[in-house]
Image (cartoon, rainbow, N blue to C red; front, side, top):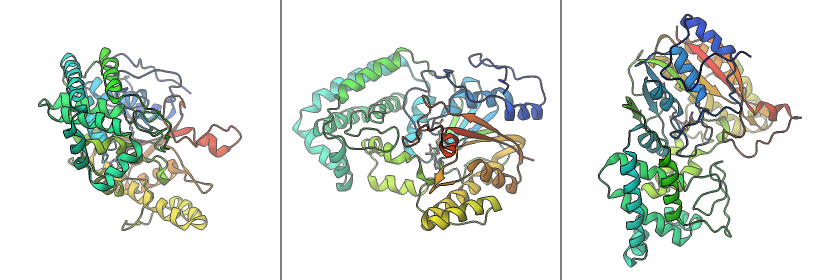
Amino acid sequence: MKQLEIEFEREPVERSTLSYNKRLENLTRCDLSFIGKNGRNSLHNVHSFPAKFPPQLPNIFIQELTKENDIVLDPMMGSCTTLIEALRLKRIAYGCDIDPLSILIAKAKLNSINVEKVFQTGKSVVNLAFKHFSDKKSKKEILNFFDEKTLNFVDYWFRKETQLELYTLVQQINKLEDEQTKNFLKLILSSIIVTKSGGVSLATDLAHTRPHIAKDKSPSSAFEDFNKKLSSLLKNYTPLENPIFKIFHSNAKAIPLETNSVDLIITSPPYANNAIDYLRAHKFSLVWFGYSLENISEVRNDFIGNNSFKGKTFLPLPIRCMTVINKVQEVDRQKGMALHSYYTEMFLVIREMYRVIKPKKAVVIVVASSVIKGVDTLTHECLSDIGKEIGFNLIGINQRQLDRDKRMMPTRWKRDQTSQIETRMHEEHVIIFQKT
Ligand SMILES: C[S@@+](CC[C@H](N)C(=O)[O-])C[C@H]1O[C@@H](n2cnc3c(N)ncnc32)[C@H](O)[C@@H]1O
C-alpha cells in the first residue's frame, strides 16, 4: 500500500496539487494503519477513552480534503481527536456527542488555558480539599450529595476514604469562577478515576468498560494522584492557539447545523452489540459531577449500539443488512432486533450527515465489524449500502490494521491468528463517501 507523502508534524500544511476527486481516490488506497507511529501530543493524552482514533487518521483526511478555515465536523466526537487535529491545522472544528463526559473532555481540551494558572489553582484546590477532608461537615454532606441508588453504587466501587477525597476535591473545583480552569481540573479528576487499572476506584479495568470489583485492591490517594497528574500533564502541555470551534451535546441523528454547511465529516460510530459500553465506565466519573445513575441511564437509551430496542423504530434496510440481521435473528431473536435497531440508527445518522455536508464534499466513517453469535455483522458493507441508498457516491473502502498497543478495545478480543473472525476484529474499515 502506498503511504501518502504527508509529514504529520508539519503544520499548517499545503494539500497535494491533485484534484479533489483524485485525492479522495488516493485516500481509498493509501496506508492508513500508522502502526508503531506516534502521533500523540499532550492534548490527546489527557484522558483515556475507548476506541480513540490515532490522530494521524483524521489528520491525513483534513490535510488532503480541506483548507484553512474550512469546517470539519465529527458528530460522534468522543475524546475529540478529529476536532483537535482540525484545530491544529487551523480549520474550524464542530463536534457533537451524547456522552456528558465527552462534552467535558471537549470543553477542557479545546479551550485555551493559562497553564501556570491552572497548575497553581490545582495545587491550591488539593490543599483546600485536604483541609476539609477530616471535617464532620464533609462526611455528612456527602450523604446528601447522591440519591440512594447512586450512593449505593459509590459505596460499592469506592472506599470511604476515597469518596471523601473525591468529594472535597469536587467541592473546591466547583467553587472556582474561571470556567476554563474549572473544566480542566474536572478533567484531571476524571482522568484519575477512568484509567486502565480502575484508578482510585476499586474497579480493575475501567478503560475497557468491563469493570470488575477488586476488594483487596488498595487504591492510591486521590489527592496524590490528582497532584501527580496535574504536574505530569501540565509539564508538557501545549494548549491550542486561538481555536475556533463549536460543541453540541446532541444526538448525531439531529445535528444542530444548517443543511450544506460542512466541508468534511470524519467520525467513528460505536460498535454494534454494545461491544464497548462507554457509560458503564464513564459513570464512575460522572457521578462526581452531579449525574445520578438515573440521569445516566436516560442517556444510555440514545446510545447507538446499545442493546435495548424498546420503543425504537425499525426501518426497512438494504438487502445485505436485512440478510445479516435475519441470520443473527435465527440464532438469537433479541440480538437480531438489537442489530436491526443499530443499522436503523446508523441509517438516520448517515442521512443527517448527508444533509449537513456540502455538495461534492466527503464523509469518512471508520468502523469495525462485530461478531454476534458467530455471525459477522459486515458493518462496513452494510453501512456502505445504507450510504448509497441515501444518495452518497461510495468512493471506496480502505482497510486499516489496528495497533493493539494504542487503540483500547474490548479485552475479550484476543489475537488468534487461526481464527478468521478474530483476525477481522483487528482490522477497521474506512468508508469514504462523497455527496452528489
Ligand atoms: C468510537 S467513539 C468515538 C471516538 C473518537 N473517534 C475519538 O477519537 O475519541 C463513538 C462515540 O459515539 C458517541 N455516541 C454514541 N451514540 C451517539 C449518538 N446517538 N449521538 C452522538 N454521539 C453518540 C459515543 O458517546 C462515543 O463517544
